[in-house]
Amino acid sequence: MTLRRMSGLTATAASAFTALSLMAATPANADENNPHIEPDVTTTVQVEAETPELDAPANDPQPADVAAQPSAVNYTLDDIQQFTWNPDEEWTVDIDGQITAETGAQTIQKLFDMARANPEHDIVMRINSPGGVTASGLAIWDAMHAIPNTVHTLCSGTAASMGSYLCMGNSSGETVVTPGLMTMTHNSRMMIPPQRGSIMVTDGVLETVRLQTEILKGFMCGSTDALADNPRRCDVIGSMFSSEDFWATPEELKAIGLVDHILYPEGFNHNGQKTGRDTLCSRDEPRAISLCNALHAQDEVDARRENEALKENEVIADNQTAPAPSLGL
Image 1: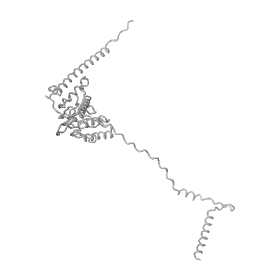
Image 2: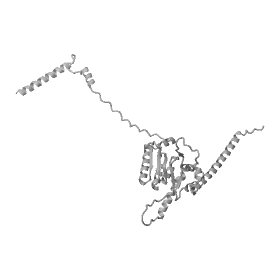
Image 3: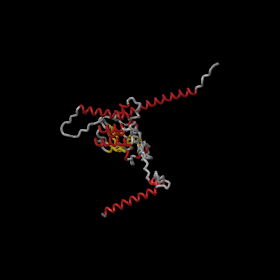
Image 4: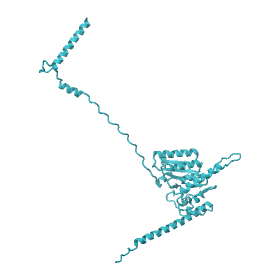
């Protein structure tokens, strides 16, 4: 009974509160027959003011910033000279010691990584090698010329056999060496380790040696500028390839055109020293004699071309100074 009575009182109170609310919201001049309740403007405005504004639609995501393109970097001779003692490790490839299949693969991989990082950045390959596996050296040479980067070679210490071919076969067209460099060339060889019993050298092995030697001759012939107009250019360069080792100084190789710059110390005194051409022509070896004769023949070609150019310039000058013909009336 108590609970039911409380429920009834609660319902009655709620009904009374509702009636009072309607009476307060009804305007005084409302039509009794049409008790329409007008909404309170103040209440409406307040509700609208309290209504939270919807967040503006998020802007379309901006495209990611395009990565800046790497800039081109070209080394000068002064830059390359500093690589002898202060190299830029990121753009330096060192071939120090024998050229093996492993070192060849590592060198090629580093060249390719550099080319992908920046195809317009020069690379310096520092070489101090007595040579090694011909096939691995040829693969390095191919990689040097396959990538778009310019590969300079800086050779010091020793550049012999395959090391000399890489030293002079760069893609920059300029070979830079130190004055104390020892260089040696010879034909391709098959290194056969000592063993007991007979060693069979098949025709296939000999053919491989011959082909590798011809390829190396082509490399050296294509990188020589001093004998560019000599009809025996490739034959002369081929004379450096024989079963015997051909050692040469940097100055002698510069006279031939296989070396472009020798990094002498500042203030070095050359007085009293023979030129590389003089020392080359003073040697009694057949290959040195052949190279010396080729240089003399090239001198004749250069002198003939110089005379032809002078005569041509004289003809042009005469035509420009000749008086114009007068027209007779």
